[in-house]
Amino acid sequence: MMKIEASLPDRIVQDPAIMLGHPVVKGTLVPVKMVLAHLARTTDFDEILNHYPEITMDDVRACLAFARTLVAGASRREEMATPAAR
Image (cartoon, rainbow, N blue to C red; front, side, top):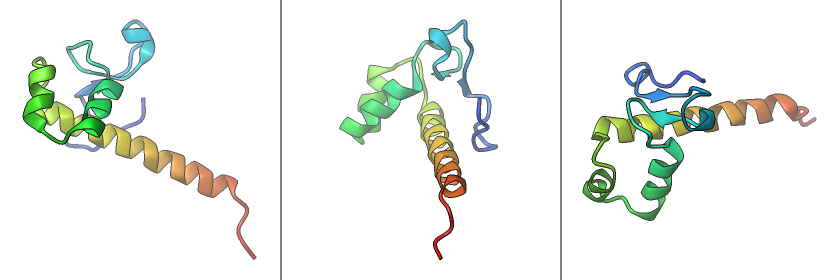
């Protein structure tokens, strides 16, 4: 698993024995991708927390931090793979 922000490192886990290795909120079976999909539909955090009562606002923040880390890593890989413009 890629490291996420230092303040949220233990809230997201990836384990091949849990949800086929998809990242989930620690201590739950809530996949990060489902939290992010819900955030794409609404920014009403109360609605999200009501839909997933087993997670907290810090867990939602951790999902966002996890996604940000993945995007940043993908951008770096693209930059390294793209030849420099002359």
